[in-house]
Length: 433
Ligand SMILES: Cc1cc2nc3c(=O)[nH]c(=O)nc-3n(C[C@H](O)[C@H](O)[C@H](O)COP(=O)(O)OP(=O)(O)OC[C@H]3O[C@@H](n4cnc5c(N)ncnc54)[C@H](O)[C@@H]3O)c2cc1C
Image 1 (cartoon, rainbow, N blue to C red):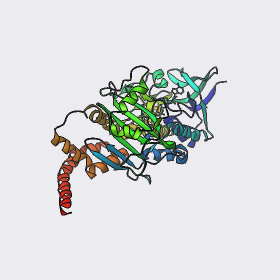
Image 2: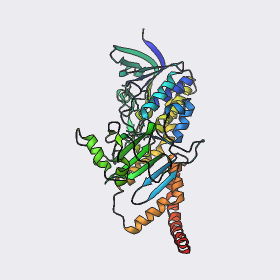
Image 3: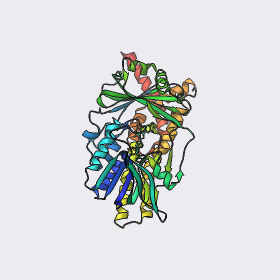
Image 4: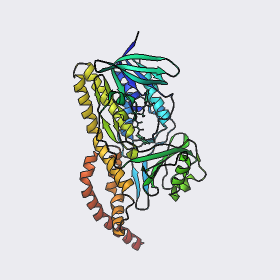
């Protein structure tokens, strides 16, 4: 006899596991199938998550002490480059004034383990979906196989693709893509290190953005169990490692910044170099007859601003609500999908545009030679307390990116007026001493 579930979720990382937990809270009979064994790292992901993501995790009931075990709290983000220096305190959001650079293997395993504790949720690891079952143009289940097992069919009311950027579900249903941006493609490489020297300006664990070489930047983040994640992101063509030489390429690119080199002196790289080339940016159709997409399978967002996990958790939340409305007969499946798409787009689209602009400004246009007066102006604007405050609020989603964009000219003018006055005051104080 074929088995039956209300919902089958393909993929068990942030989107799939948190959706399963939310469906478990509703008592929906759910099966999560995940190709990988856990704990394991995903195909590629650097680790920063901000407080809004933590709030979404609270709603699923998963314990912070489990997913962030032995992981330092990062209360300040620094930018250290030749043009300006930033020290951004993270604002208190729902009682949290910190971010984490999590251990993704531990984080993902904790989320799935938590979901599997709901009585209506079953999970199968090392189980790969190879195809979908169809009836009269509607998806009605999966074709899958446990590692070393035989092929089986499992039927479901809804099949959800939480299977990441290269989603098999999206391919099998031929999901339409839109808002695709491939004009400024980026690539990212990272590894974890031990015994990295602390950032000299910081008294607590930190995340520090440094300039790299031409067309790429570096991010050094204190992470779990005394490790440090050292990441580089830049123009895709410039971060193209020669075949078989990824580690050498990564180490050579790190040397562009003497401050990073100094911090790495005596440190040891404790993982392989991971990464992704030409990272995609797009939305896909949210669902169709008998199926839906969630997380990266639905929306892919350049990692520069560290918003991917938030998006995965948020899209899972809205899809859980859409499924609830549908199952209670409050909406047809088509209406539920429309609601899901609108809700997630209104929360994610502004930040998507903002990140695309940041990629262009910081990775593609950052190396333009500016005259010295423009560099001074840039420093005055970036180091102005209002700008610093805005950065913290933007990263933690306290202010919509659209509002920041509108306010930017006024803030810049204010900063350009305030900065010379500050400098005069500083000089007068020095003169007085
Ligand atoms: C280079 C890089 C750096 C990033 N850095 C950050 C960051 O610092 N902060 C942040 O918030 N986000 C970051 N992101 C984004 C973040 O990693 C993703 O948004 C997030 O992992 C998406 O979660 P997900 O659950 O949708 O998909 P994934 O994490 O991709 O999980 C999909 C799962 O589906 C499983 N699967 C796939 N196909 C099948 C199948 N056929 N059968 C069964 N299982 C299957 C896979 O094994 C995988 O475990 C980064 C992304 C990249 C590429």
